[in-house]
Length: 326
Image (cartoon, rainbow, N blue to C red; front, side, top):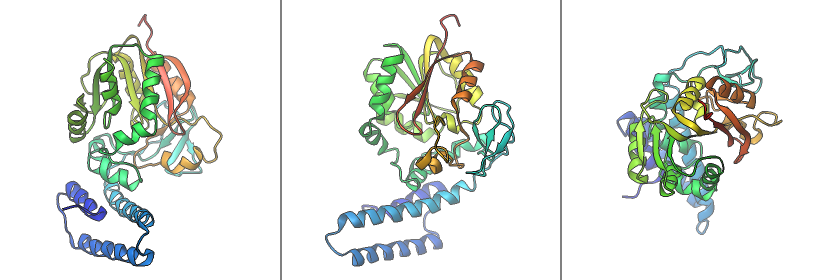
C-alpha cells in the first residue's frame, strides 16, 4: 500500500516512539484527510501543481509539530563561556545565543548535552522527521539532491585543488556518503564516520563505502591525508577538541577541509534570509567567524591555507594544512 504524506509521518512517529496510533494521532489523521478533501474540492480538478504545493506545506506543518515534540525532550546544558574561554554578550536577534567578546562566535547558551547527540542525530528523528520539518530532502533523497545542486562537484574540485591526488580520506558526519563514493571511484581510500548506527549502516550499504559509528573525537581512526567535515562543526560541543583530533589524524602535508557557517558578511541580522536556519538552537551550538577559525587553527597547530572559499551563504569553507615538519 502506498503511504500518504500523513501515513509516512505516522510511520516515522512510530519508529521514534515505538508505537503508532494513539487517540491524538488518530484524530490528527482524520483532520489530515479532511484537509486533503477540502483542497481537492476548493482547487478543483486539473490543478495538480497547486494541490502538490498545498500537500507539501501541510506535510511540513505536521512534521514541524512532531519534531518540536521530540526536540523539546532533548536534555540541554547551560553555557556562559565560548569554546575559547571568552565571555558572552547578549545577541539581540536571538536571545538563546550569546556573542563571544573574544573571537566573535555566536554561542548557543542551551545546547544539547553530549550524551543526547545520538538521539538527536538518529536516522528517524534527524534524517526523516527533522529534515521534512525544515522542508529539506530525507537521507534517501539527498544524494541526488546534492549532486543536482552542484555541491558534490564543487567539493570534488576543491579537493583536487588543495589536496593530494591519492591517499586516505576521512569524512566526519558523512551523512549519505555521496562525496566519499565519488572519491572512492577516483582511487582514494575512504572512511566515513556517523554518530548513529542505522545511518552508518544505510550509507555503507547504499554507497559501498566504509562507515564507522561513534562520536568524534572519541572513535578510533587511522591517519589520513584528507580530513573532511561538511555542515558538522557548528553542531559540535567542543570544537577545539574536534580540530585537535583532526590535526592529530592528518599525515604531514595533509589537508583539512571544513565547511561550516561562518559570518563573513554585513547582513543584519547575520546571514540575512538564512538567519533562522543559521540560528537553529535545536542543533547549532556555534556559528563561527574567521577570527575564531584562525584561533582554532593556531591551537591545533594547523596552517590556514584559505578562508575565502564558499559554495553559498552558510556554505563557507576553510582549508587547513598540517606542516611537513609536524
